[in-house]
Length: 145
Image (cartoon, rainbow, N blue to C red; front, side):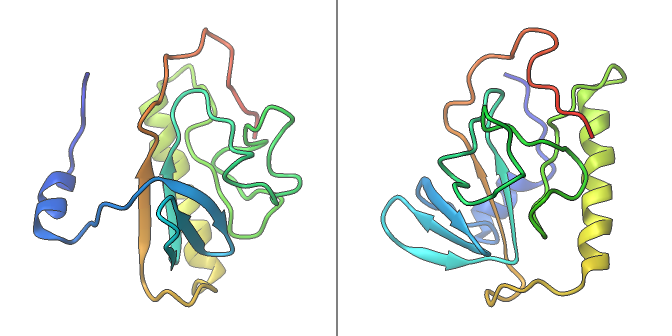
């Protein structure tokens, strides 16, 4: 399995990035973990795999997800202020390239929106789905902007 590490492993070893239990719910800048603990974060970055159904994690995000639980837009503001999705648009010029473009756009939009409303300080949480599943067939999972 190819892996691109931009210093993440070193930051985990140094304690700069903490490992948390499975995510059970997200709401208004807070994360509830499988063990029942709840923490506030200014930003939450999730790697949900190739066939995500985000409805269980985001049950109250009216207008941001389609009927299958996929984001309606990728790399742009959603119907929910402060909620962005990245990497859901399948690009003919390369998925990693598109993710980079979307990530920069989201960072610019977030900076322009001003300080985070969450009370958690300057904290960002990143999590990954432990069961990402196989790549979808061509044409599936693409989200228009």
